[in-house]
Image (cartoon, rainbow, N blue to C red; front, side, top):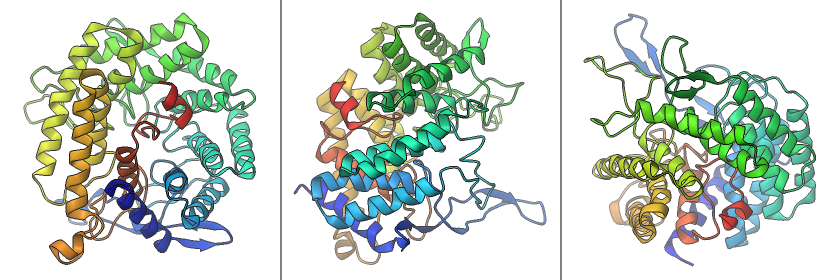
Amino acid sequence: MSIYLENAAAIADQLCEDAHVANGRANWVSRSVPYAQRRPDGKSPDLLPALEPLNPSFYSGTAGIAVFLARLHQYTKDPRHARMAKAAIRHSIEHAFDVVPASERPMPIGTSWQKGFYIGSMGIAWATEEVGRALGSDDIRREGRSLFARVASEPSATEFDLMFGVAGSVAASLSLAEQGYQGAQEFAVAMGDWLLSNARKEEQGWSWLGYGSSPNAPALLGLSHGTSGVAVVMQRLYEATKDERYLEAVEQSIAYERAKFDAQEGNWPHFGIPAQQDGRPGFFSTWCHGAPGVGLARAFLYPRMRDARMLDEIRDAWKNTVRSVELDLERPGRDFQYCHGVGGNTECLWEMASVLDPAKGAKLARDVAQYGVERYGKGAAGKWGGWAGWPTAVSHRYHPPLITGLAGVGYFLLRVHDPARVPTVLLPAVSMDYAAAR
């Protein structure tokens, strides 16, 4: 057993130990990711954490943890990992169409965000299928089909992106179609057509307004909430249908992002945050917003489109993301989560390197994993003293979920252990079969 698999298994053991299980359903209690709120005196914002159960989603809830445990079980064969994966996904199934209370605001996972992959009912349907396949459970797979059928029976949509919206349904439906889900490809086409009809078509290219966008501001860029995410799923839809309309959407999405690139920053702006004091837009360097996610999307698209300009964009994204990772590793305790942490940025670099220099990417992933294991992994407390667990999106004890927490750290280590078989979760709805065929 490699040190990466050993530490991934230790994380799974911790998740199993800390789960709250009742009636065959599992959940975890954690501090929420804090949010800014004005103090009563109105002078300055405080960060107000709250203790709450996880939601059912793939991004920040029990569905993502279930996928990690189920895929890990294929290596450990530990019955605890299988049992907890089943219990976690059953919680997600039961609450897939809820509006989930949360400390900051309700999460309409089963209503206006229903079509989303990372936070939406469609993502839970896909996760249910993946868990059922990994564990050889026909009962769980039947639940996945039922969830998909319910989402597909409600064609209305309000959001466009991968996180909460229609782009997530395109990706998930195409993956489920490969598993024989009745009507899945047709639903993917219907959602793709929704994206076409709701595009904001301008001279610079096409974009979409949605969660976090203002009608008077540029639409969001990037992977999870922006035009890169649309480009990825429309390319997959084009591959499935050979419909040139979807290929045009890919090209126009890229054109819009290309026009917004800031050469001075070597990055793509985040139009959902306040501008800088000099009036220039703000920037993130994370999977969810900015160069890492854009570079990941271009690494997916380049082998399919062979657009030479994409190579330059991948190189720009690489430089920006490398700087971000180097700075993070200089700061002890910088979190290792996927969404906006070291693990996510490293995995984005790994995927970019598949185009630029595959050996370099694999070495980088191993080096970062080794760094993390030595400082935060199994046995680190004995070396460093005190509690030396993996830092995630909240301070003072770990955060459990896949994309914002400890399960994602475990998944990253599992990928480093066996990159040929374990697909990234930072591109939407990539099954183990689809990854092997890439």
